[in-house]
Length: 214
Ligand SMILES: Nc1ncnc2c1ncn2[C@@H]1O[C@H](COP(=O)(O)OP(=O)(O)OP(=O)(O)O)[C@@H](O)[C@H]1O
Ligand SMILES: O=P(O)(O)OC[C@H]1O[C@H](OP(=O)(O)OP(=O)(O)O)[C@H](O)[C@@H]1O
Image 1 (cartoon, rainbow, N blue to C red):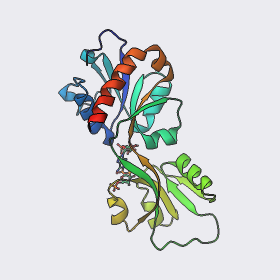
Image 2 (image 1 turned 180 degrees about the horizontal axis):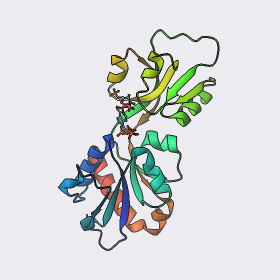
Image 3 (image 1 turned 135 degrees about the horizontal axis):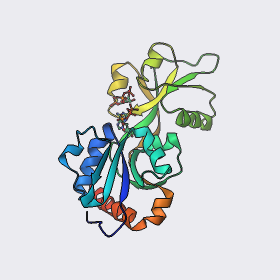
């Protein structure tokens, strides 16, 4: 990716699940990522040959870095974009790390009197969904192992990511409704999009050509 004529861009990459597929996409787009990129503990990785600097962030923080402009562009799950609701441009669906946000619960759960409780890592998405359904619920924010909540009586239902369905199945839970399909997106800072348009467009085009090929 020869970009020497344009501005240098800072790219926020999520550590964790998305990382490997995103790095693979970048390599196929022609970004010469060094081999140590994949298992380094470094949080800032310059790739001078592509005129890019990568910052490796917690997935939920990627839109924050991009909104504040400390990263020009970022790679992040649509689930995080919906939950964080940051002021960024969503440029492209990278069509990787496909999963869905769904409502799940015990198969024999029946509504009782009182307000049902919903446990989730995604309180904003869950609140909006149930509000739009006209259902009053109490949303309880958890940070992981969401499937535990209905098993031990913390919540009646959960809103969580479902991918293979294995976690639900192994815990005796069922998917009740899909809220929204999820894939990974390329996002940009609003100012960078205008002020560094040549560089941002170049990265966009590279990604777009690879995504179309798939
Ligand atoms: N089975 C899955 N479970 C969770 N996230 C998935 C799954 N499949 C794809 N994804 C995507 O990967 C992203 C989550 O990556 P990861 O699991 O590394 O982060 P995380 O567990 O939310 O991070 P952390 O635990 O550090 O807060 C999600 O935002 C989603 O877009
Ligand atoms: O449908 P599956 O393929 O089983 O994937 C879905 C599970 O994966 C995620 O959990 P994760 O492994 O990130 O753990 P945590 O959220 O409980 O920390 C998600 O929160 C589900 O529990």
